[in-house]
Image 1 (cartoon, rainbow, N blue to C red):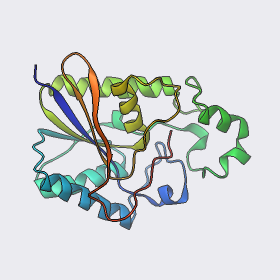
Image 2: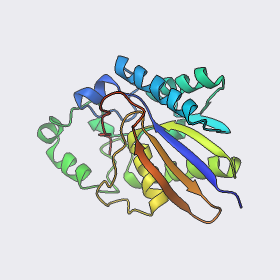
Image 3: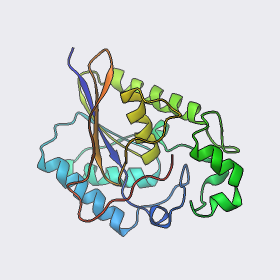
Length: 214
């Protein structure tokens, strides 16, 4: 069976990325640098002549506007899928990572130690988040079996896709970075997932920030 390939793209930079704020489901727009990153990413995909069959994006605007750069350059239309959203981080959303340990020390400790059942008071537990991302990936894979899928999502969501594709435990420490506007490749051969390449930012001018939303 022909493998189904996914090129996973993290959205471009936002002001909250720069400020170190946890975004989660908060619908934050790209900043000027993020818009430039999205354009650079789309041109890079064009330059390598990537023949993708379908484009998916999260419904949050930082992902959708990153996907819009691809839509414009390739004259295509993205399929919007809310299941590709970032993890909902409950009361931590909107807080800076340097203030959460002071304002919510116990919750922050459980968060950074990857308590997989902790929903961060009204958010989404790691187990629920993993289930959502896994179901979304499998549905897309089954619908587009043997095809190449271009997918724009979020740092935490792509980290979860990496975990699923590499069989990394949900409570294991973060193993990879997911920079803004990076290209990341996973595939499924009909039997199992595997990671092909990860965190390619060679197409970007300047540094790209890693994800904060664990």
